[in-house]
Length: 253
Figure 1 (tube, rainbow, N blue to C red):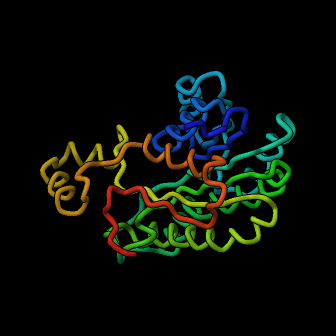
Figure 2 (cartoon, rainbow, N blue to C red; figure 1 turned 90 degrees about the horizontal axis):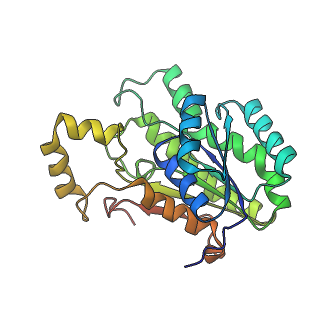
């Protein structure tokens, strides 16, 4: 299927590793030019080597609204447009339920919610100039159901889901579609599930057999495929949606 993404300019925050890197790589394979942003320059440079010549990097802290505005201003100056924004920056690290502090709430909301809203606010005008344009926010199934994840993390993703739905109507008037993708348990080398497999593979296997109908961990590439589809003209009648990619783990309607 030709997704007609060649020649598009895509910004992927959190694009230096894991799901963000897979998304950026998939867009480049589709012929898009990709800008990846993250806080750590060595990770960005390593990712750029993986993605190839269609990739540019920007060291940016997406939790800082001024930094996001500067990032978008730089993109406008260099390319004069932005077709697709993928807000992927975030972190699942937090404290166990019941141990939240005021500072923990601020830190986790900044990492997983404001990192997206800062970029959306900064990029909307430039995206509108490229209409039809797209925003895809990487959420989580933890924002949809109580799955034992840190409460702060789950709440931040629920807030992101509500924002995607709420913004879909006003952004549509500007020619911008906005959607979310909610991954389930995704295996990334060096990531959470890699560590859990090394610590207790039997427990992971039992969880998969008990909770995930497809009985496997997901791959970042599968999330990337979903994102590229939503950003393409093949999904031109989809906005305000939340595409769950979790092997069937969630049970709610």
